[in-house]
Image (cartoon, rainbow, N blue to C red; front, top):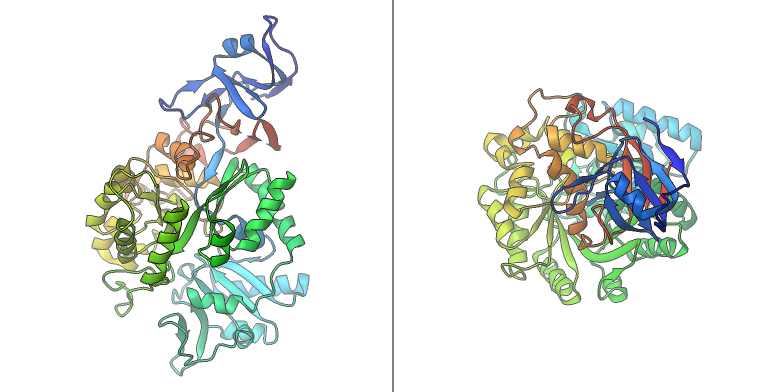
Length: 536
């Protein structure tokens, strides 16, 4: 495939525009999922679509791209991620894929020798990959790092594993009555194991020196370039404090933040004070409030009606009180914000549905969301549709968790877990995301997991719970127009249509027609935001 850039046009007095793209296979993802050959963009907006001949007769581009039949899609939109956490993670120790405690320590020691830091931070460890799948203790961390604090976030970010020096700096003591039940794991002789869950993580994190603003900005811009290389034009940041929101806003006002960012604010008084109503701009939207009802399944914190099948005394953790949850929903409704709530366990999801029902009327278009919706009780699927509650799904969670989820949940409960097609059936649509850095931000993995229900090794052979595989068309919708709809931006982006932002990607192979075995061999070759080429 050759891509040719030319600066010539037709001789029929065509309109001069910034960009003409032709000889392509453009999946517009419009209402009829039409495919066209060409389009024109001017001042950052699509101004026409059609055949190569028709577009080149109507428009003369200051730049013109002959794509030689390449596939083009609307720029991908990650509808649930943590942009700044991904950016900060570029400076942390990556523990993803480590298969033992010893391998974790090896990576930490290598980082320590290279950088000689005042503290060590890492993320991505996952005990389900280890021979001993129990949550770890910190003996080997203490042995390797007796004097420097070590802070290691689990892959789901709902557990942290730290050494004794970090515990000492936090001020936490065994028996502290202010630690919520179940959030500090203990040894048999009454000591902290080093693993802390949910709200208590914040008390540990408070002792970590914050990243300086200058370094954070550098990380954000580095992460942005990485996202562009994957074909992302829009991302979500699911829950930010005021200071980080201000940094993103200052970057977009300066013109250096080009990726479109859907920011959900933490439900703090200072956030509601500065943003009593939604704030929207071309590159930063602040129009949703993020809440949590429970923890994560991998760290056994998801809130369940019945105890964990592999931990019969544990029902999970409710991390936000009923009263605070209701009060935040009231403030959001009054201000015109969406509410987006992390809910993973069946009881957690049931409680959120109950809470939302106090505020939502049948037929509403407020688009309040339940994020992840991983374990749904059989009677609760229909409740999503009755109140137009949007299930926000992350297809790679299914293929990451399938090796151990049934052990956690048992043979009956697992049938309602990661049931993405059932959730789409309940409402008619759903925005797709990754929950990065929990999963890779690369949308190619989202597409592959959604349509195959297999991991990157093509296992299991028939796909895991394949009845919940999603069609290629709906997967592309979930990554583009449905993701835009999830944040009330479907009239601005998410499809290649006249009047919308000219955000699009060129792909090395056609995801809609390739054999599934070849999907993961493809990649983004070009990314455009508002008609501007931002990758490569």
